Length: 128
Image (cartoon, rainbow, N blue to C red):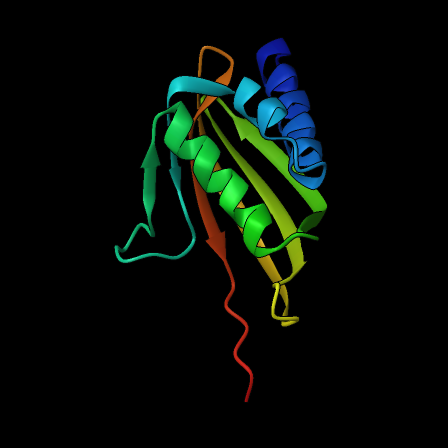
């Protein structure tokens, strides 16, 4: 693994820890100024797109507002050049008491040692 790949892997580990700490400042320290976050759900095939630091920060904070106990567990990461992937299991409870548990992943695009794009995907659990 190259030094750059190793540094990006460490960043993804710290990024995952910041999610579980509900620390928007730490998360944004890993993002470029022109960052993009594509959510796992929304009105478009790519979900809902949030562009720029303030829009991305608000979107991240909204996740914790919806799921006050949100956790991303069992995170695994890999990096290849300017791309990376994190796999995780999301758990959270909505304010109405409904519980969510789903596997998911984030696809990352890096620039200058920071995250420029975070593209999220999550399995939808269907109750039968």
